[in-house]
Image (cartoon, rainbow, N blue to C red):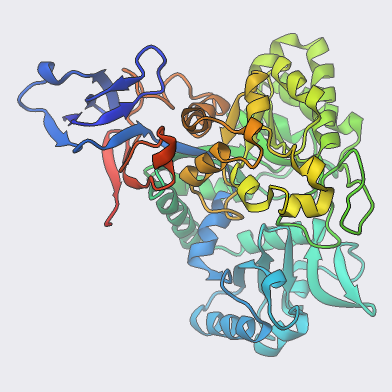
Length: 522
């Protein structure tokens, strides 16, 4: 069945033909542009009424399972007091018969009374494990039953203690074990429901490609245990029927040897959150590892953050990935972490120059030395960035400035500098820390607080289209509107390449492989 979309404004992202007014689809692929006079009588006609059409968006950094869990489990995003938290947990325990009560998006920093503890959870659910993940999934609050079930006690260094007694708060390795426990507690139906929920969230925002970071972080870089990524293996069957493309990033990296397992399983990209350092923004709570900076923090903790890997281990990960033909994506936020990644990749390329084609990836890359921006371009390193973090935490009065000062905060998320250096930027959200919302990311890149780092609307759109395709090795048939390309489209009410219209632009329809899979009711 052929479909002709007519009376539209098609922004193709193909430099050889930037605009068109109609687009012909057959068997899920684009056949021709401006082909209205050549179609057969059997062709289905769709009049777009002058709306704008782009290649469908993507998201280069999602925690796919966690994102769906926000929908199928207890969401705590609006909880603002310990009493309200107890009420929500009690309600969840009453309505959910499963063995583990899971809650997500807990933000104790917004509580109006006091910080909740294990004792508060025990008071309402003493007999079943309760696991409440903090916003950003960097920490969790557990009740006593959960601590026992997971095997976490006072001997684990990342368990918070008060007078020698666990408060229930955990981070670091203890939190990774808790998150693994939470995912393993999902049954097959819940995994399928979570996957469908994530796909639905993406489609309503015009996204048809998600890079999914999946696998346990427990034991990361602590030694090879020859274990399969059960987390990812259980998710994969649930993806086949979804109207989205999922690029799986196996992030279970106990050691570099895991990259051989990943290559054997046919994955071309891996990691996404191989931690080179800690965090800088909203996910941070005292006790957690911080982004590795060149100069001390200015918010009371005079440290410079933490590198998780020594140089030898970091290089071993990158070298093994190169030898196995895998594009490795690493979490690197601060200057020292980004520099370490580039240093070690440069050493690998000295021996394996052909590996430059693998497009290794720095995820986040929030604060980077100027010289390293140029070096990233020379070394073929992709930056997977989340522009909405700049809106959320950037600027002279934002969270970054409070932590590192206004001078360094003016160097966060250097979109223009990176692009000018030839670095391909792929856009994402870090969902569920931020919602899957490419238009918000596009606006953030266009409206950076530092004018010299702003992208044009079209350049920002490329971050969430052609950039995504390039990072996933899909640029031969994704990310643009060209004959032969997959017909993944987003229909918008106004033209987002017009800076004056971008602020009010919204998604009207999403098409996947030539079929409409979402339509706004508004």
